[in-house]
Length: 151
Image (cartoon, rainbow, N blue to C red):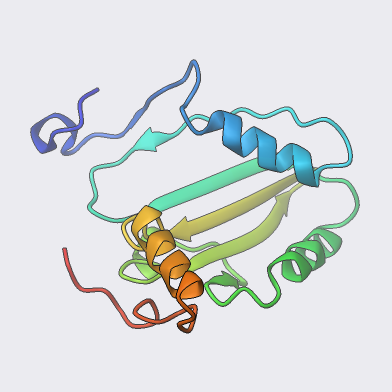
């Protein structure tokens, strides 16, 4: 699976099945939050679009989905660029923004959490701007609250 337009256009494919470069940091952060051990399967897919990541995470539901929603809402309270949403979102709805749209649901005894974001803004570039703002005493959201129109 390539990374050039002619190789990925009109195609969708899994990559780094044996182990993605971000798996160690994802596992580290989940273990820091979890009371018990974490078993994680992380298989990203490459879709031919300019902007967007849609993460869908499945895990055993302990307690009710309402309790899980409450835990997520509490964790993200006060985070200006993370929004808890009532319905699962598509990448188009986060496109050109610094927002991460998080939905918590369930299918039977499995929790299903989705997160949609624009990887060009909410990704490393947006993080860089946000860190710059904090480091130099600017409002955290300066230059990140309006729609970014390019590309």
